[in-house]
Image 1 (cartoon, rainbow, N blue to C red):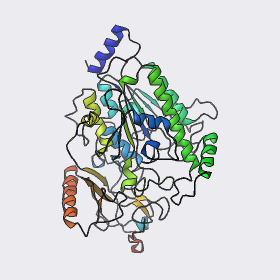
Image 2: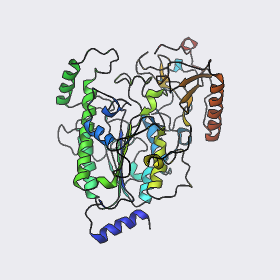
Image 3: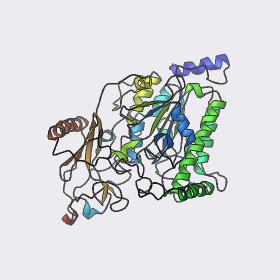
Image 4: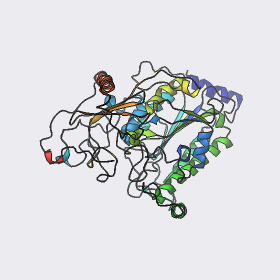
Length: 480
C-alpha cells in the first residue's frame, strides 16, 4: 500500500473534510502557461502587463531568476517535463517535421523528429498515480494523443494538438476533448479554470495532482474586449517604446485573464482549507515570441537556444515549507520536477533514467551540487519574420546545434559550419559579445564537456548534406 493511500484512509477514518492539518505529503498544482516570456509578469519586472495574483504567489513563495525550459518550443519542452528526460532520449525535438523552412536554405538533412512520447514512458502523472494521488490535466497536453493513457484520471481539453485551433479562445472550441458543451461566447481560459476548480473540490479530501497547462498565451491572440480597451488606453499613456514591448494590448489582455483565473484558483484553495497542504509551481513551457513581446536584455525568443528562448519565469510555493519572498539564482530546468516530486511523495525512481535532479534542498534554503545544463536540437526551426527574431540570421530561429551552460559560461555549437559561440552570462546576459577568440581555453573546456555529454546520451548529429541546398543561402549572421 502506498503512502498516499494511507493518507487517504486516515482522512476517511477521521472524517476530515479538508487536508489543512495533513502537511507531510502535499497536493501538487503545476501551472504551465504557454509561450509566456521571462519578463511578461510583474514579479519579473514588467510595468505594463498586470499580474497581481501571480505576483502575490511569488511574494508567498520562492522565485528562480535563472530557471529554464529543457527545450525552446512547446512539444519537446513538455515531453522533457513529463518524462524527466532530455530530448536525445525521447527524440521529440520540435512540432511536426524537422525539415522546417525553405528546403533550399537547409544545408544539412536534419534528424527525423518524433512527434510524441511513447506510451511506455514513465510520466509525472504515472509517478503521482503510483503514490496514490488522483490526477487531472486541464488544457494543452501536446505530449501524446491521449493523456488518459499516460497516468491521468481526468483530461479536460488536451490531446496531440498544440493550440486551440481556428476558433481560438471563444466557444465552440474546435472539438477539444470534453469541452464540446459550452456556453456561447465562453472563454477557454475561464472554462479550464472552472473545470480545474471542480476537480479540486471533488477531491478535496484526498491527495491530488493538477496539471494546468493553459493554452493561453499562445497564438491566436484573442483577449476580452474590456481588457483590450484597458491596455490600449494604458499604452497611449506610455511614451513611445522603440523595443515594441508595449504595443500588444491583446497579448496583455490574455496575460491578465490568466492572472485573474490563477487568483480564482488560489481563492478556492483558501476556501477549501487546502492552501497549507498544496505545493504550487508556476512557469512557462518556453521563452516568449519575440515579435509579440521582447524579453530584453535576453536575446531572441521562442525556438531559439539563446536565453530568450529557454529562460522562463518560475515560482514554487508551499506555505510554511518554503520561505516566502525568497529568490534563488541557482539554474534549474523543468527536467528537475519529476525527480523532485518523486522525493516529495516518497516514490523510488532509481530504476528510471532521469536527467534532472531533486531540487527540494533548494526549497529548504540549502544548496545542491553544481552541474551543467545541456540542450540538443539537431533540426531546423524557421524564423517568424526575417531579421526580427534576434537569432543568428534572418532565416531560422535556430539551426541544428547543441548548447551547454556551465557556471554562467554558455557555449553554442552549430553543426552546419561547426562554429562555436561563447558567452559569459555574468557580464553579458544578452549574449552579444562572442568570446570565442579571446577565451579559447574556456571554449575548448566546454566543448569537451558538451561532446562527452552527447556521447553519453547517444545524441544524434546531422551530417548528411541536403542535395537541394543552394549555397546562395550560406549562413550570414545579422546584427541583433
